[in-house]
View 1 (cartoon, rainbow over the protein chains, first blue to last red):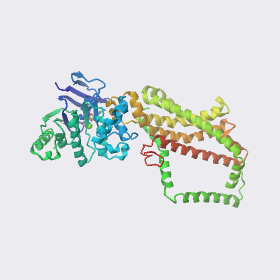
View 2: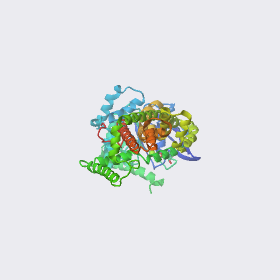
View 3: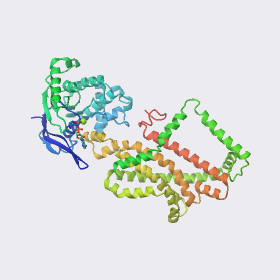
View 4: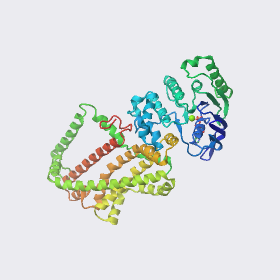
Amino acid sequence: MSEIVVQSVERTYRSGGRAVHALGPVSMEFEAGRTTTIVGPSGCGKSTLLRILGGLDRPSAGQVLVRGQPVGERMDGIGVVFQRDLLLDWRNILDNVLLAAEMKGLPRRAVEPRARALLDELGVGDFADRSPWELSGGMRQRVAIARALLCEPWLLLLDEPFSALDAMTRDQMGVLLQQVQQTAKTTAVLITHSIPEAVFLSDRVLVMSGRPGVILDDIAVDLPRPRTLALREEPEFAAIVRRIRVQFERSGVLA
Amino acid sequence: MSASDQAQQGRRLDRVRPREQAAIGRQAATGRGWGWVLPTLSGIGGLLLWELAVHGLELPSYLLPAPSEVALVMVEKWRLLLDQLVYTAFAAAVGFVIALAISLGLGAMIAASPAVERVLYVWLVVFHAIPKVVVAPLLLVWIGFGLKSSIIFVVVFTFFPMLVNTVAGLRSADPDLLLLARSMGGSSWHILRKIRIPSAMPSIISGIKISITLAPLGAVIGEFVASNKGLGHMLIQSVGSLEVPVAFAAVTVVSVLGILVWYLAEFVERITIPWHASQRGRSGSES
Ligand SMILES: Nc1ncnc2c1ncn2[C@@H]1O[C@H](COP(=O)(O)OP(=O)(O)O)[C@@H](O)[C@H]1O
Ligand SMILES: [Mg+2]
């Protein structure tokens, strides 16, 4: 059985008398330990879907089951990375990572070694005592990833985590994330606007339509791991990228 | 008060944002090396000109005393001036602390509950619209001469900017940040302590900086009307009896108090929010 089951989920926002049908109905399943990427045009409800998966928002219709149980108000064991790193200026880098534990009321003593190890693994261990504003965008996002991983989440939700970074940093981060996933094997749902990035990082790509978003295509990416950036030049890779692009063209997202 | 109203009010008060004034002052002051020369020369030159004008035009001291005369009075009456200063500063300090406590408490309640806000909003608008100076004589009627009146007037005079900024600050936490905190399983209490309050600090400190400089002014105005002690009373009385040099001495002391309070506010800002963009890299701030 799949770890997460999404059943006919819809979300309509109501504000000031107007209703915006943002998402769905969508149904899908996520397997444990796999990375699934969602691509789709801006405003199609990707972030909304991600929030619903994490129990941070409620669907207007349908339901999400996690290991057979309906998702409630609060969900334990998820790690979230947003496009903005959302580091707290009043905490140094280490304390920013430890925030994830403090929010759960865990004593920081117990998790500090893991926080330092994660920062090392992500290549920012030397900056543990620095302030966020002393770090570059890429480094800050590494810290945000460390923070998301601190409490060993079973589900990692990544909402355009590299969108604000330059192309080269972005590639680096992709490779890094893949490395981290290689060992952690967390179930991950990633949103991105970059089709190559989607293919490179995932075991499966879901293609969404414009608002209200529905699933247009569900593509397995059976490329061997660990992957290197050179893989992007291979014909198998290019074929998958093309298939996604064609979907977008057909639905009028890409002219 | 809707969130946007609040934000706007915050912004309106922000127009006189002391931080910006401070930044401007700082730039001038750190014009490295010789930056102090021109201001000093300008100050001394102005005083000299004033001194010469008074003697040259033979102005009587009940119209305009020479700086030297004012200085003489200050030396002669230093004990009296010091007493009045302590009295006024005490009223300002106590009033300010009470106002701070009220605005933090009330601000937290308003930020937490739309119902409280709706109940209080109209009263706050009315209260803010009343010119505070007009209230001072009423305090005399209700409370009588003395320290209590001055303190209450300082409270009335200073609490509004701090209240508005506290509310605006507590509401200013980044929605994505709150979402992130929730994804970490944070309880409301943890989110308040670790996200909302620190996010509110720059705004609260801004309010404090406005109010803290209003506090001595409030005390002096209160003393004009409802006191027989303090720098305000001394000022009114000396003008009434045409002892203008004494009035000038009192004004000088009030100004010195204002300057001290300003630096106190800067100091508080530096130690409470060293992480804020306005404070980074300032000498004395850690990191
Ligand atoms: N909190 C909200 N209130 C009202 N409308 C919203 C809200 N969040 C998102 N929307 C709307 O729902 C649609 C989908 O938003 P979102 O999930 O952020 O899309 P995406 O992440 O795919 O760009 C958009 O049209 C957006 O304007
Ligand atoms: Mg989005």
